[in-house]
Length: 148
Image (cartoon, rainbow, N blue to C red; front, side, top):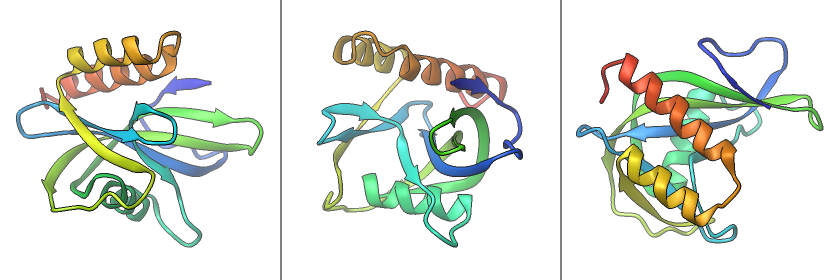
């Protein structure tokens, strides 16, 4: 179940991290997942002995060749009953993109504003309200932070 959060959950282990990356002009970055054929938030699992920040940095580099600024604001979590763990979404600022070969599961990225993201995701993923909820939570948090 998706929940809006202010602080990191402490009652269960955080096993996954994702982010909505915001560029300096207020657009967002999402990755194209070649296997799922969907636009996804950037992120994945936390490797053994890896901290949250390291996992976010690694996933951003592996998926889209992007470095992130150091400020990470948690805004949503999903509790997975099957593993008794959380996935947490962070709002982050994109730092820079470097030349990248897309050797992992993502084959590219899209940069767009929140409104266009909502339209495309609605068209591609009919019936997936969760991703739209994550986008809306991120948009509201970004507005409160004056990142937009």
